[in-house]
Length: 339
Image (cartoon, rainbow, N blue to C red):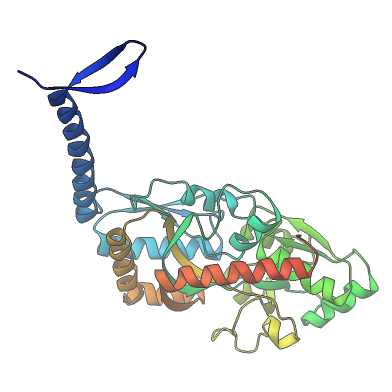
């Protein structure tokens, strides 16, 4: 005979349920949870078993795009699966970064989420992600050349010439960037604010469009990354790097601090994914991309593109991102751009 237990009381009668039914239900729930956990662990252990998508929030053809296509190609041999580069440009990089942050945390969608615009956009406008809370950094493999460039035949010989022109010709100095909130936009606008000059910002979808507009004479100054062949051919000239240290490839080109501008400049190439990525998946990706950094073909490619390699693990990079996000928030408050 089954022993009955009272579950709830309603009016003058009791609802009854048999103990075996309850036990079976509980056991089914426990079994489901345990099986899901076991499946997840097995999936992590086998990872990767299919192609990986690597999102680049820049249009094809720019320096950043070329770097990520290079590392994707060379990392395939260490992961044992194809890595498909997917460009998602626009809205100051936020479209691509949001796609990374909102992806399923299984390691099959990763990407570039290291552009300074990642820090700025969430502070000045509503975007569908938070750079600290919604992203997990996997590793850093290099430094970006965020620059201030002019056309090859421009009369501007240095950055001081740009400021002097702007001082004498209010609003006539036009400069392009990869969009409102991009670091090129923020860096130049902050320097102009501190110099008390008025300049005109022209936003584009990415650096390739900015460079095309500069070469075509539609803007006087370009910001963002750049293609080395354009510099080598004399079509553009490099006046300033928005970076934390001078580039070994351009040792004579000053950085902002050299000119007295103390503005945060976290410019890095990274691999990131959504929050929720397991430690095992992160380790496998970190190991593969770290091995890629030592690969002769990758080293040769980075040298040809004139980008500096620099490694930082995901944990340290998470801390670096959080610190710079706070630094940008402080800067924008000091400048009166946010409350």
